[in-house]
Length: 422
Image 1 (tube, helix red, strand yellow):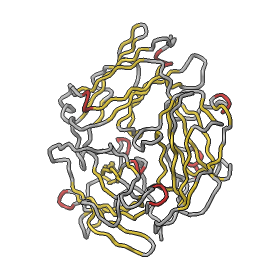
Image 2 (spheres, helix red, strand yellow):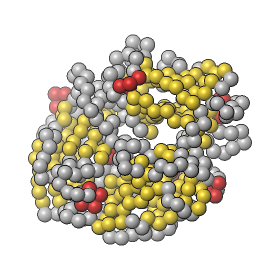
Image 3 (cartoon, rainbow, N blue to C red):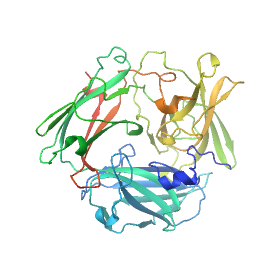
Image 4 (cartoon, rainbow, N blue to C red):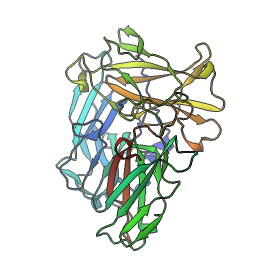
């Protein structure tokens, strides 16, 4: 069976860059890193804490390989820190992943790998951004994929609220954050050089806002309350598709084609929602969960299906000077050739395909200007932006001691629009 992967394999030059949350080998699928027991929880731990993470992934070659992992400390902008691993890892810097199991029942064969982190023989000792790198044969040049994880030391106090922007141009479509950081016992003599703040919406780094200098500070208190920053487009509730069973199709499946070596599913065509009123329903804010109603253990029993998506633009006419992309956690929130939808003049719809494991998936369609990609992906013409949209936000506070070469993650504060929007 030809596998249609949603993530593209990067060129050699990009491989050396080791971009976060990227897959470099086409046989890797369904790679997730999350807080133990909760697939929706972002991988966040504390130095020396008791929390554990779970790393899972499938190898579609369905054989056994020698996978290893290591940690790479990065600064707030995810550029690697040039210090020795001995400065931030206690124990072994490189470890083998030995827990694996062959798939059972599934028509698409694979080998499922699983590990809980940190292991007893390898601990992270410094707070900050970390790149978890998985590679073959104890050779870091054979990189399979990377995942982000955060190690936070709660050394600052953060208070925040979400407001409706005062600017009438954004008041109905965007959401604004206002927050204060109290450095408590940290010595911040040069806040413009030592303090950095990053804001995430729904655990996405592709649209993260890197804050500039605080609007005001006095003593240990730093206030961020600019009228224009940080302001995020509200987006809409994410679309969903239920793939927990391939035998009993959910309401989002138009038809199924059962083949000897795999299943092909056709999702019902989606339409533009930008001109419709906002409607709330529960979602997972872009994430996906691997689970099944047909089998006992989705990790090694769940099957894969080639899923066809279709988006029908207004008047069945392609967007002018815009490309359309499928987006969600399962795409890595990547904008590339693998996530790009192709317009079919016969059906009047954009079409794309992804290989997905049984589970519940959130997704959205975004546009990107064909000639000026600097503005980034937009929900405006496909999903719409609404101030009322339910979103999660995370405020990450980084601190660099004078003379240090690494940013420390000294505070993290999470909030949701349903509880704090005013």
